[in-house]
Figure 1 (cartoon, rainbow, N blue to C red):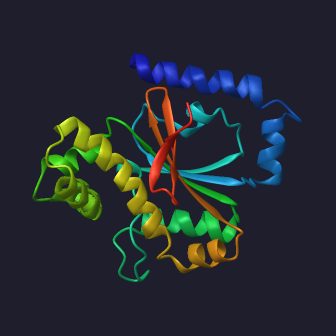
Figure 2: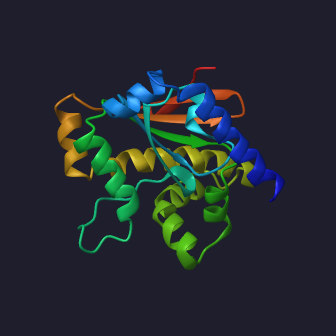
Figure 3: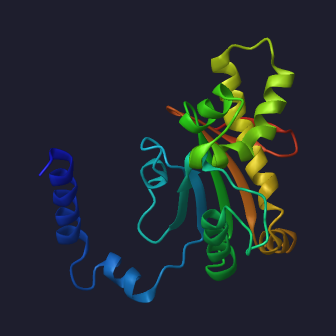
Length: 208
């Protein structure tokens, strides 16, 4: 058995022994069912685990992760190519009734790097990241003088803004936002630097 698999199995065993004893908080939560107040849509990147970054406990966050943490526009459920993300959205918003929905983007995102590096997109990955072309086109047009690395960071943030816009194309999201029962957030993490999107000022404000 490989070292990494042995390590992961050992980790599960340790968790089970420490957290899954009778009447433990974890077991109580599982028995009662989850009722998270917040939902996170983030990148699949192994370095930006929402639980690790936020210190959240089991049952506190409903999480969906995909390449670049993107949200597509709402499509007809019978023809949608992005039903995975859309179905998680529907479950979190319409079923679990989360009160906060966070788009968590990050620096050095491989998906955004792929988006900037290519003009033609194919395969599963290409079909997915192509939805962020509006973010790429906006940054390239407005920041031709910037370095590729600078454009990449700007595009990572622009992709968060695009996902926030796309969220409002889902009727069940739009309804709850307009009812003030759901708040949308855009977060960006860069190796210790953390900023939050301010819609009124259209900027990411540094928090730490």
